[in-house]
Structures are given as C-alpha cells and as structure tokens.
Length: 151
Image 1 (cartoon, rainbow, N blue to C red):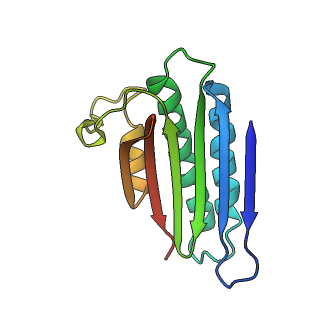
Image 2: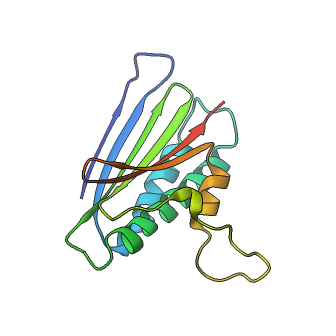
C-alpha cells in the first residue's frame, strides 16, 4: 500500500493531495474511509461542520471503494483500487479508479426505501452527499469522480 501527501503551507489556501493504492480486498475499505475522514476533520480553512463533512467523506469513499472492489474486479485480489483525494482552493475532489467493465451511473435505480435491503444504496448516498458525481472510462479503466464544494 502506498500513500503520499503534500501540503502547500506558503499560500492562504492550502492544497492537499493524497494518493492511496490498496489491494482489491474489502479489508482496506475502512482504511480508505478513515483517511478521508481524517483529512476532512483537519481542514482548518473549512468554516462549515467539519465533523459532518468528515462523516460524509468517510461514507462516500467507503461506498465507492467497496463498489470498485465488489463489482469492478470481482474475485481479483491481485488487482488494486486507487483513491485520490485532492483539496485545492474551495474544492474537495475524490476519485476512485477501477479496471472493471464499467457501468452507466445514471441508470442505477433509486433505492426502494419502502422495502429496504442491505444493498443498493451506495450510489444514491454518494450522489446525495456530493455536489458533482461522474463515472467515466479513462485509459484502461474507469474513474468515479466526486466533488464537494467547501464554501
């Protein structure tokens, strides 16, 4: 597992870049969520509720990573999931990369809250909690891009 982070402390607005690469194993999902949560909790520049932002980021990163591991590269523990978190100016951007066949994010049905099940709510939560969500094919895989504006 590799993790790198840089913080530009010479400017009024700090920049954060974190690049995480973990094996395609569900045991790493909580780690990814926790890293996002810690980043959000420590955003001194963010004047909103940092605890709420931290919980939201933990949830969307956990859901997105689990989806990539469970659906994109099913049964391929030798593959990796890559998560990039970037904060620049007033924008928090998280990307989750996978090498699966991909899907149309706009065709994922809304969950049936009258008859809830244990599955099928991840994309709904991600779209609800983030300001912009896209999923597209890039290079040899796909990227789920999630953006939260911090102002």
